[in-house]
Length: 466
Image 1 (cartoon, rainbow, N blue to C red):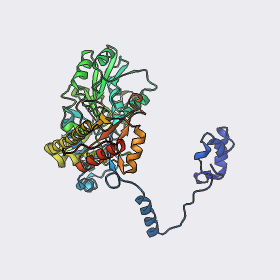
Image 2 (image 1 turned 45 degrees about the vertical axis):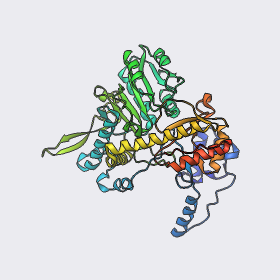
Image 3 (image 1 turned 90 degrees about the vertical axis):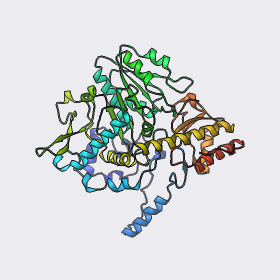
Image 4 (image 1 turned 135 degrees about the vertical axis):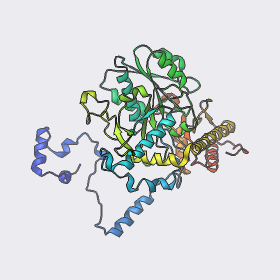
């Protein structure tokens, strides 16, 4: 910190002195003494200027030009819960129309019919995709949607204190759940995977007992492997527990068996793939759908359909279960809003693609990832699939070279090869996760294979195309 750094606070010197005295500190510098000096500014920031409007625009455009953008400057195979998909230009145009504007939240249906109808249609799409009859108006993002799903299950099974989850669920989702439950009296049991890359069925069965409130798995799981829902759902139901299906790549639901059809009681996850760009970490779009008998335990808000006094079809908020609307002890969550703009973008995206278009897009993702898997399996270039099980659009690859070194070499060539797993799974330190979507044409798959082969000194197999 530097002398006088507090001058930007909207308080005077006497206010600062009083606050420091009340917390037992002599100065601002002492207050931030725990911050390493190496990361502290030693002099005021030289911002330059002042600049006129034209100069300021030019200045920031120069900064913008320094960014490296996936798909323009870099070939990207990043995934692991955040997926690059093409979005029609009309999505951005439509979400800005006045029909969808409302003040904060659509409490007054008379002036919020556009927003309420869009929410209702989003709920309908999520219900169709998940195979469950009741969906809410959206959640903040996938990780908190998962944590809220677990809390919902513990409300349904009030006397049970054990939560059983697969270790193949996204590490950030599991970390978020741990934060939610840190000060609550619940036991979280994590179950590992078998040689197929799926949740170990024997270990899962052994972990579930009469104290288990819920069982949660992810499919496709964090390794890109398709788990299927039926096995875990049956084991949960045999002990009277709630089964939770987690989906981080929502596009997969257009092709694979839905969580509801597979026996899940709750489906939750991330819908960013539907019309939302990967943009420096957000915004994201959580979703949740449940069986009808559990709808009054669901967090968040729901939009419902009714008729007005003139007999016209209209939409309203219903089943609002937050403490803002009812007695605090009867509330299910403190979630007070939904990702309305992101949900609107997803609704438009899904409307434009339709059932058949969405399935075809999912097939392209499946085929291109399968093509890359086959090519790397045949190449013998020190890179090989870690698991032989079917996947969707991600492949877990094992590298004979140190992953960090390999990533550095490929990034120097303009290729982001994927996400390393060693930080979250030490036993998979030699592995990385590569995602392939419709944004990766066959030429990019070939470029990745060639670059991998170049850095291992192996020949590239020729012949097959995606």
